[in-house]
Length: 116
Image (cartoon, rainbow, N blue to C red):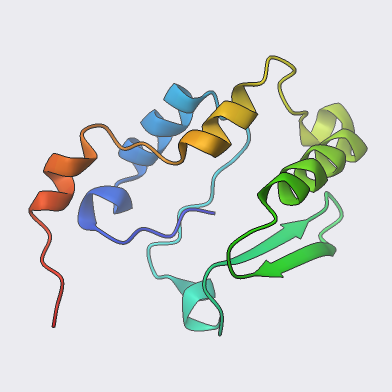
């Protein structure tokens, strides 16, 4: 799920383009209303949900990236071809370590003002 912070991140075409660039082939939900954020007490929070809709793992706060990545891969393998599988070429791992990329971020973020 993508929960945008800035206006350019709310554009579905931008999100779809970056997902393609990163090699993401699974669906990415775009939550412009920040519904989970408004109902979530922790940041960051990761919830892994299996192909049957059961929450199989949650993690509040930073850390345990390798464990989370391993669990994602396990859930994808368990889901099988219908649910999709992790690429074997390591692109998912590279994308995880590189983080999100929305074109020229410094330029796009430079126009944002932080209240306070």
